[in-house]
Image (cartoon, rainbow over all chains, first blue to last red; front, side):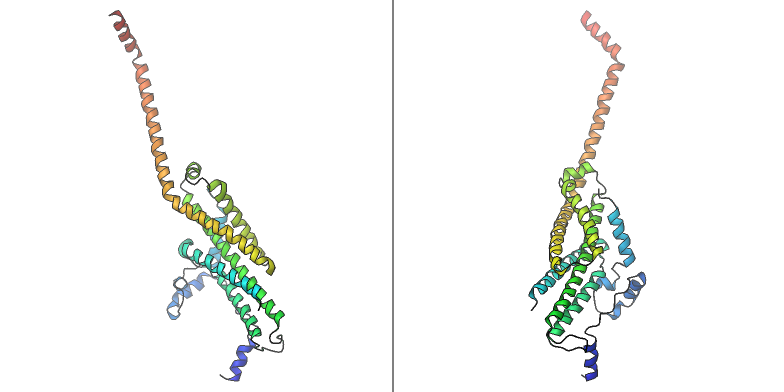
Length: 68
Length: 223
């Protein structure tokens, strides 16, 4: 391994990882479209995850609906 | 090194994993939720920084010297805070999932049936569900806590949520009994109506033929 490469990884130790973007329907669509190229969770590759908007909507609905 | 902090991180992390798996396996539409993963990713990032410092990997001129215990501790505290945020994101997800399941399961039944089949529902389960979901939502908005309080909060909500999961599973198991009781109640109502109709019809018939009955009794007396 080259010294320059070592310098690169050492210099990012204190850097934060990239922030997670807002999860949208577009992200879900792209995830499903490109899932064949990546290894990983079946849930994610089939788009079985909440978008931020969906999550907040369902959560608000559940919390505001009175229990029987 | 830093055993107490690591113990807290390991404990909270595994609570996170337990509830996360439960939510994925039992949640609405079996969907996953990405926000907790983001917090866990950040927790991992801070843990790696602490380990890098412990291993003496120098970084740049702004970085503390190798094996700086205070720096490692501050990194691990940050890691713990991210685990804590993940915990409350997952708990929030769990609490509204539980509410939705209860709403769906009990919607077709009235109060009388529910209290007959699940006697603890109105006295314990429902108040616990209401309190837990609102308290967790409040703590989720607050986000941060002192590292010393984190395990206390986590242990507390772990016991509340574990009890609620058991209660909700009890409700799910009672769905058959609820349906059976509803059916029985319907049959007994029909029987009651039929009885009223039969008795009513008998009375009507009796009063309708009252004159004839009187004549018949008088004939019997004359004889």
